[in-house]
Image 1 (cartoon, rainbow, N blue to C red):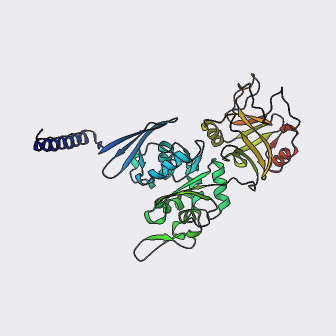
Image 2 (cartoon, helix red, strand yellow; image 1 turned 45 degrees about the horizontal axis):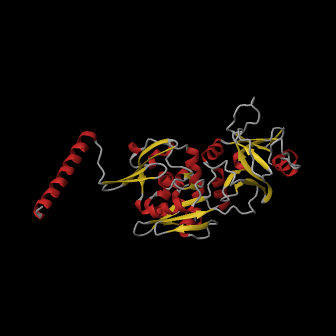
Image 3 (cartoon, rainbow, N blue to C red; image 1 turned 90 degrees about the vertical axis):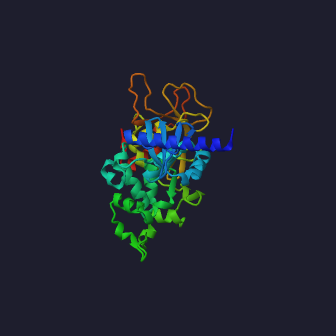
Length: 374
Protein backbone atom coordinates (compact mmCIF):
# COMPACT_ATOMS: atom_id res chain seq x y z
CA UNK A 1 0.00 0.00 0.00
CA UNK A 2 1.23 3.49 -0.88
CA UNK A 3 2.79 5.31 2.08
CA UNK A 4 0.62 8.38 1.45
CA UNK A 5 -2.50 6.23 1.55
CA UNK A 6 -1.45 4.74 4.90
CA UNK A 7 -0.88 8.20 6.36
CA UNK A 8 -4.21 9.40 5.01
CA UNK A 9 -6.03 6.42 6.52
CA UNK A 10 -4.37 7.04 9.88
CA UNK A 11 -5.40 10.71 9.84
CA UNK A 12 -8.98 9.79 8.96
CA UNK A 13 -9.04 7.27 11.82
CA UNK A 14 -7.84 9.87 14.30
CA UNK A 15 -10.47 12.33 13.08
CA UNK A 16 -13.22 9.70 13.36
CA UNK A 17 -12.20 8.86 16.93
CA UNK A 18 -12.14 12.53 17.83
CA UNK A 19 -15.58 13.13 16.31
CA UNK A 20 -17.07 10.04 17.99
CA UNK A 21 -15.59 11.11 21.33
CA UNK A 22 -17.03 14.60 20.93
CA UNK A 23 -20.48 13.23 20.06
CA UNK A 24 -20.47 10.85 23.05
CA UNK A 25 -19.31 13.63 25.35
CA UNK A 26 -21.99 15.97 24.05
CA UNK A 27 -24.78 13.42 24.38
CA UNK A 28 -23.82 11.64 27.60
CA UNK A 29 -21.52 14.07 29.33
CA UNK A 30 -18.99 11.24 29.65
CA UNK A 31 -15.46 11.81 28.42
CA UNK A 32 -13.74 8.92 26.66
CA UNK A 33 -10.25 7.98 27.90
CA UNK A 34 -7.29 8.27 25.56
CA UNK A 35 -6.37 4.67 26.39
CA UNK A 36 -7.42 1.82 28.65
CA UNK A 37 -5.26 -0.86 30.26
CA UNK A 38 -6.67 -4.13 31.60
CA UNK A 39 -4.53 -5.02 34.61
CA UNK A 40 -6.84 -7.83 35.72
CA UNK A 41 -5.56 -9.45 38.94
CA UNK A 42 -7.80 -10.57 41.80
CA UNK A 43 -10.18 -7.63 41.33
CA UNK A 44 -10.20 -7.31 37.51
CA UNK A 45 -8.59 -3.87 37.53
CA UNK A 46 -8.91 -1.49 34.60
CA UNK A 47 -6.94 1.75 34.33
CA UNK A 48 -8.38 4.55 32.18
CA UNK A 49 -5.98 7.27 31.05
CA UNK A 50 -7.49 10.70 30.36
CA UNK A 51 -5.69 13.90 29.38
CA UNK A 52 -5.67 15.27 32.92
CA UNK A 53 -6.11 12.22 35.16
CA UNK A 54 -6.04 8.45 35.54
CA UNK A 55 -8.89 6.40 36.99
CA UNK A 56 -9.10 2.88 38.40
CA UNK A 57 -12.11 0.57 38.11
CA UNK A 58 -12.29 -2.73 39.99
CA UNK A 59 -14.69 -5.10 41.74
CA UNK A 60 -13.87 -6.51 45.17
CA UNK A 61 -15.84 -8.38 47.82
CA UNK A 62 -17.85 -5.22 48.61
CA UNK A 63 -18.95 -4.52 45.02
CA UNK A 64 -17.94 -2.44 42.00
CA UNK A 65 -15.80 0.69 42.34
CA UNK A 66 -15.68 2.89 39.26
CA UNK A 67 -13.87 6.09 38.36
CA UNK A 68 -11.70 6.15 41.48
CA UNK A 69 -8.53 8.27 41.64
CA UNK A 70 -5.28 6.61 40.54
CA UNK A 71 -1.83 8.21 40.75
CA UNK A 72 0.45 6.72 38.01
CA UNK A 73 3.58 7.90 39.86
CA UNK A 74 2.72 5.48 42.68
CA UNK A 75 2.46 2.45 40.41
CA UNK A 76 6.00 1.18 41.04
CA UNK A 77 5.41 1.38 44.78
CA UNK A 78 2.05 -0.33 44.45
CA UNK A 79 3.70 -3.16 42.52
CA UNK A 80 6.19 -3.52 45.35
CA UNK A 81 3.37 -3.73 47.91
CA UNK A 82 1.57 -6.37 45.85
CA UNK A 83 4.67 -8.52 45.45
CA UNK A 84 6.40 -8.06 48.80
CA UNK A 85 3.78 -7.89 51.57
CA UNK A 86 1.46 -10.58 52.99
CA UNK A 87 -1.99 -10.76 51.40
CA UNK A 88 -3.48 -10.28 54.87
CA UNK A 89 -1.57 -7.04 55.45
CA UNK A 90 -3.54 -3.88 56.29
CA UNK A 91 -2.24 -0.42 55.37
CA UNK A 92 -2.84 2.88 57.10
CA UNK A 93 -2.99 5.69 54.54
CA UNK A 94 -4.87 8.87 53.75
CA UNK A 95 -8.11 7.98 51.99
CA UNK A 96 -6.96 9.35 48.60
CA UNK A 97 -4.78 6.28 48.06
CA UNK A 98 -7.13 3.68 49.50
CA UNK A 99 -8.68 2.49 46.23
CA UNK A 100 -5.24 2.21 44.61
CA UNK A 101 -3.88 0.04 47.42
CA UNK A 102 -7.04 -2.06 47.70
CA UNK A 103 -7.79 -2.50 43.99
CA UNK A 104 -4.38 -2.46 42.32
CA UNK A 105 -2.08 -3.75 45.10
CA UNK A 106 -4.82 -6.04 46.51
CA UNK A 107 -4.27 -5.12 50.15
CA UNK A 108 -6.77 -3.90 52.74
CA UNK A 109 -6.63 -0.32 53.97
CA UNK A 110 -7.88 1.72 56.89
CA UNK A 111 -10.01 3.82 54.54
CA UNK A 112 -10.54 4.64 50.88
CA UNK A 113 -13.27 7.27 50.84
CA UNK A 114 -14.07 10.57 52.52
CA UNK A 115 -16.84 10.66 55.09
CA UNK A 116 -20.08 12.51 54.46
CA UNK A 117 -19.12 14.93 57.21
CA UNK A 118 -15.96 15.97 55.31
CA UNK A 119 -17.17 15.96 51.69
CA UNK A 120 -16.04 19.59 51.38
CA UNK A 121 -12.43 18.43 51.08
CA UNK A 122 -13.26 16.89 47.68
CA UNK A 123 -12.99 19.21 44.68
CA UNK A 124 -15.36 17.15 42.49
CA UNK A 125 -18.08 16.42 45.04
CA UNK A 126 -20.44 15.00 42.42
CA UNK A 127 -17.92 12.24 41.65
CA UNK A 128 -18.14 10.77 45.17
CA UNK A 129 -20.66 7.97 45.63
CA UNK A 130 -18.93 6.03 48.40
CA UNK A 131 -18.34 7.14 51.98
CA UNK A 132 -16.37 5.76 54.92
CA UNK A 133 -17.47 6.11 58.55
CA UNK A 134 -16.34 9.44 59.94
CA UNK A 135 -14.66 7.71 62.88
CA UNK A 136 -12.24 5.99 60.50
CA UNK A 137 -11.33 9.20 58.72
CA UNK A 138 -10.80 11.03 62.01
CA UNK A 139 -8.68 8.18 63.40
CA UNK A 140 -6.37 8.17 60.37
CA UNK A 141 -6.05 11.96 60.51
CA UNK A 142 -5.16 11.75 64.21
CA UNK A 143 -2.61 8.99 63.58
CA UNK A 144 -0.82 11.13 60.99
CA UNK A 145 -1.00 14.47 62.77
CA UNK A 146 -0.15 13.37 66.30
CA UNK A 147 3.33 13.92 67.66
CA UNK A 148 2.85 10.92 69.96
CA UNK A 149 4.18 7.71 68.40
CA UNK A 150 2.23 5.57 70.88
CA UNK A 151 -1.05 7.21 69.82
CA UNK A 152 -0.31 6.34 66.22
CA UNK A 153 0.43 2.74 67.20
CA UNK A 154 -2.84 2.49 69.11
CA UNK A 155 -4.81 3.65 66.08
CA UNK A 156 -2.92 1.23 63.84
CA UNK A 157 -3.70 -1.57 66.25
CA UNK A 158 -7.37 -0.57 66.35
CA UNK A 159 -7.63 -1.35 62.63
CA UNK A 160 -5.02 -4.09 62.49
CA UNK A 161 -2.69 -1.99 60.31
CA UNK A 162 0.96 -3.05 60.14
CA UNK A 163 2.08 -0.81 57.25
CA UNK A 164 1.86 2.94 56.55
CA UNK A 165 1.92 4.50 53.07
CA UNK A 166 3.07 8.11 52.68
CA UNK A 167 2.99 10.05 49.38
CA UNK A 168 4.98 13.19 48.62
CA UNK A 169 1.79 15.28 48.29
CA UNK A 170 0.81 14.51 51.89
CA UNK A 171 2.88 17.52 52.99
CA UNK A 172 1.63 21.11 53.34
CA UNK A 173 2.48 22.21 49.78
CA UNK A 174 -0.66 20.95 48.02
CA UNK A 175 -3.10 21.24 50.91
CA UNK A 176 -3.60 17.64 52.00
CA UNK A 177 -1.90 18.19 55.34
CA UNK A 178 -4.23 21.15 55.94
CA UNK A 179 -7.24 18.84 55.69
CA UNK A 180 -5.61 16.20 57.86
CA UNK A 181 -5.18 18.73 60.65
CA UNK A 182 -8.77 19.94 60.23
CA UNK A 183 -10.23 16.43 60.32
CA UNK A 184 -8.15 15.62 63.39
CA UNK A 185 -9.68 18.61 65.19
CA UNK A 186 -6.50 20.70 65.03
CA UNK A 187 -5.86 24.22 63.74
CA UNK A 188 -3.67 23.94 60.60
CA UNK A 189 -2.28 27.43 61.24
CA UNK A 190 -0.61 26.12 64.39
CA UNK A 191 1.38 23.55 62.38
CA UNK A 192 2.13 25.28 59.08
CA UNK A 193 3.64 28.57 57.95
CA UNK A 194 3.85 30.38 54.63
CA UNK A 195 7.19 31.34 53.11
CA UNK A 196 7.83 34.54 51.14
CA UNK A 197 7.07 32.72 47.89
CA UNK A 198 3.69 31.67 49.39
CA UNK A 199 4.78 28.03 49.75
CA UNK A 200 3.34 26.29 52.80
CA UNK A 201 5.77 24.34 55.00
CA UNK A 202 5.69 22.70 58.43
CA UNK A 203 6.62 25.01 61.30
CA UNK A 204 8.39 23.72 64.42
CA UNK A 205 5.21 22.17 65.82
CA UNK A 206 4.38 20.62 62.45
CA UNK A 207 7.81 19.04 62.21
CA UNK A 208 7.05 17.07 65.39
CA UNK A 209 4.01 15.36 63.84
CA UNK A 210 4.20 11.78 62.63
CA UNK A 211 3.30 13.02 59.13
CA UNK A 212 6.37 15.23 58.88
CA UNK A 213 8.62 12.59 60.44
CA UNK A 214 7.34 9.93 58.03
CA UNK A 215 7.76 12.20 55.00
CA UNK A 216 11.39 12.85 55.96
CA UNK A 217 12.09 9.42 57.52
CA UNK A 218 13.12 11.36 60.60
CA UNK A 219 12.82 9.21 63.74
CA UNK A 220 9.35 7.87 62.80
CA UNK A 221 9.56 4.84 65.11
CA UNK A 222 8.62 2.61 62.16
CA UNK A 223 10.88 0.69 59.78
CA UNK A 224 11.20 2.07 56.24
CA UNK A 225 10.78 -0.98 53.99
CA UNK A 226 10.32 0.75 50.61
CA UNK A 227 10.88 4.16 49.08
CA UNK A 228 11.13 5.76 45.67
CA UNK A 229 10.99 9.33 44.43
CA UNK A 230 7.33 9.83 45.40
CA UNK A 231 6.28 7.41 48.15
CA UNK A 232 7.44 5.59 51.25
CA UNK A 233 6.18 2.42 52.91
CA UNK A 234 6.81 1.84 56.60
CA UNK A 235 6.24 -1.26 58.72
CA UNK A 236 5.42 -1.48 62.39
CA UNK A 237 7.62 -3.94 64.21
CA UNK A 238 5.48 -6.04 66.55
CA UNK A 239 8.20 -6.27 69.16
CA UNK A 240 8.00 -8.32 72.33
CA UNK A 241 8.04 -5.16 74.43
CA UNK A 242 4.61 -3.95 73.33
CA UNK A 243 2.35 -3.80 76.39
CA UNK A 244 -1.10 -5.25 76.75
CA UNK A 245 -2.96 -8.27 75.38
CA UNK A 246 -2.02 -9.05 71.78
CA UNK A 247 -2.74 -11.80 69.27
CA UNK A 248 -0.18 -11.87 66.43
CA UNK A 249 -0.01 -13.87 63.22
CA UNK A 250 2.92 -16.30 63.40
CA UNK A 251 3.39 -16.13 59.63
CA UNK A 252 4.05 -12.40 59.26
CA UNK A 253 3.92 -11.05 62.85
CA UNK A 254 0.90 -8.93 61.93
CA UNK A 255 -1.25 -7.78 64.85
CA UNK A 256 -4.64 -9.50 64.60
CA UNK A 257 -6.35 -8.56 67.89
CA UNK A 258 -5.37 -6.09 70.62
CA UNK A 259 -6.88 -4.63 73.80
CA UNK A 260 -8.60 -1.96 71.74
CA UNK A 261 -10.55 -4.66 69.86
CA UNK A 262 -11.81 -6.50 72.96
CA UNK A 263 -14.97 -5.22 74.62
CA UNK A 264 -15.20 -7.91 77.32
CA UNK A 265 -13.87 -11.35 78.28
CA UNK A 266 -16.31 -13.89 79.73
CA UNK A 267 -14.33 -16.18 82.03
CA UNK A 268 -17.03 -18.87 82.11
CA UNK A 269 -17.51 -19.28 78.36
CA UNK A 270 -14.00 -18.11 77.36
CA UNK A 271 -15.68 -15.82 74.86
CA UNK A 272 -14.23 -12.41 73.98
CA UNK A 273 -16.64 -9.84 72.60
CA UNK A 274 -14.86 -7.86 69.87
CA UNK A 275 -15.57 -4.63 67.99
CA UNK A 276 -17.26 -4.64 64.55
CA UNK A 277 -13.97 -3.42 63.04
CA UNK A 278 -12.10 -6.40 64.49
CA UNK A 279 -14.75 -8.82 63.26
CA UNK A 280 -14.58 -7.33 59.77
CA UNK A 281 -10.78 -7.55 59.83
CA UNK A 282 -10.79 -11.27 60.75
CA UNK A 283 -13.49 -12.02 58.19
CA UNK A 284 -11.40 -10.50 55.39
CA UNK A 285 -8.29 -12.58 56.13
CA UNK A 286 -8.50 -15.27 53.48
CA UNK A 287 -6.11 -17.77 55.08
CA UNK A 288 -7.26 -17.25 58.66
CA UNK A 289 -7.90 -20.97 59.16
CA UNK A 290 -4.68 -22.19 57.54
CA UNK A 291 -2.92 -24.84 59.61
CA UNK A 292 0.41 -23.62 58.22
CA UNK A 293 0.08 -20.25 59.93
CA UNK A 294 -1.36 -19.80 63.37
CA UNK A 295 -1.20 -17.20 66.11
CA UNK A 296 0.69 -16.34 69.25
CA UNK A 297 -0.94 -14.68 72.28
CA UNK A 298 1.21 -12.30 74.32
CA UNK A 299 0.55 -10.29 77.48
CA UNK A 300 2.97 -7.40 78.03
CA UNK A 301 5.38 -9.06 75.59
CA UNK A 302 5.35 -12.47 77.27
CA UNK A 303 4.17 -15.40 75.17
CA UNK A 304 1.16 -17.13 76.75
CA UNK A 305 -0.19 -19.47 74.04
CA UNK A 306 0.26 -20.53 70.46
CA UNK A 307 -2.46 -22.06 68.33
CA UNK A 308 -4.68 -21.76 65.27
CA UNK A 309 -7.99 -20.20 64.31
CA UNK A 310 -10.79 -22.69 63.70
CA UNK A 311 -14.34 -22.75 62.49
CA UNK A 312 -16.80 -24.72 64.61
CA UNK A 313 -17.25 -27.18 61.74
CA UNK A 314 -13.56 -28.14 61.63
CA UNK A 315 -12.93 -31.49 63.29
CA UNK A 316 -9.20 -31.79 62.62
CA UNK A 317 -6.43 -29.96 64.43
CA UNK A 318 -2.73 -29.71 63.65
CA UNK A 319 -0.30 -31.64 65.79
CA UNK A 320 1.06 -28.93 68.01
CA UNK A 321 -1.32 -26.11 68.96
CA UNK A 322 -1.85 -25.54 72.64
CA UNK A 323 -5.23 -23.89 72.07
CA UNK A 324 -7.61 -22.96 69.28
CA UNK A 325 -9.61 -19.77 68.75
CA UNK A 326 -13.07 -20.21 67.31
CA UNK A 327 -14.23 -17.47 64.95
CA UNK A 328 -17.09 -16.88 64.62
CA UNK A 329 -17.76 -17.91 68.20
CA UNK A 330 -19.95 -21.00 68.39
CA UNK A 331 -19.20 -24.23 70.22
CA UNK A 332 -22.41 -26.23 70.56
CA UNK A 333 -25.08 -26.80 67.86
CA UNK A 334 -27.65 -25.09 70.08
CA UNK A 335 -25.67 -21.82 70.03
CA UNK A 336 -26.09 -19.04 67.49
CA UNK A 337 -23.10 -18.16 65.31
CA UNK A 338 -21.61 -14.96 66.72
CA UNK A 339 -19.35 -12.91 64.46
CA UNK A 340 -19.05 -10.37 67.25
CA UNK A 341 -16.83 -12.61 69.36
CA UNK A 342 -13.95 -15.05 69.40
CA UNK A 343 -13.66 -17.99 71.82
CA UNK A 344 -10.52 -19.60 73.21
CA UNK A 345 -10.96 -23.34 73.14
CA UNK A 346 -9.18 -26.68 73.03
CA UNK A 347 -10.82 -29.87 71.63
CA UNK A 348 -12.42 -31.93 74.37
CA UNK A 349 -10.66 -35.07 73.15
CA UNK A 350 -7.25 -33.48 73.63
CA UNK A 351 -7.44 -31.28 76.76
CA UNK A 352 -4.23 -29.55 77.86
CA UNK A 353 -3.30 -29.04 81.47
CA UNK A 354 -3.15 -25.27 81.01
CA UNK A 355 -6.49 -24.43 79.41
CA UNK A 356 -7.27 -20.69 79.29
CA UNK A 357 -9.81 -21.11 82.07
CA UNK A 358 -6.95 -22.11 84.37
CA UNK A 359 -4.55 -19.38 83.28
CA UNK A 360 -4.11 -16.82 86.06
CA UNK A 361 -2.19 -14.39 83.88
CA UNK A 362 -5.11 -13.96 81.48
CA UNK A 363 -7.59 -13.74 84.36
CA UNK A 364 -5.56 -11.15 86.26
CA UNK A 365 -4.88 -9.04 83.18
CA UNK A 366 -8.52 -8.69 82.11
CA UNK A 367 -9.57 -8.12 85.70
CA UNK A 368 -7.01 -5.30 85.92
CA UNK A 369 -8.32 -3.55 82.78
CA UNK A 370 -11.91 -4.06 83.99
CA UNK A 371 -13.07 -6.16 81.04
CA UNK A 372 -13.56 -9.44 82.91
CA UNK A 373 -17.00 -11.02 83.14
CA UNK A 374 -18.19 -14.26 84.74
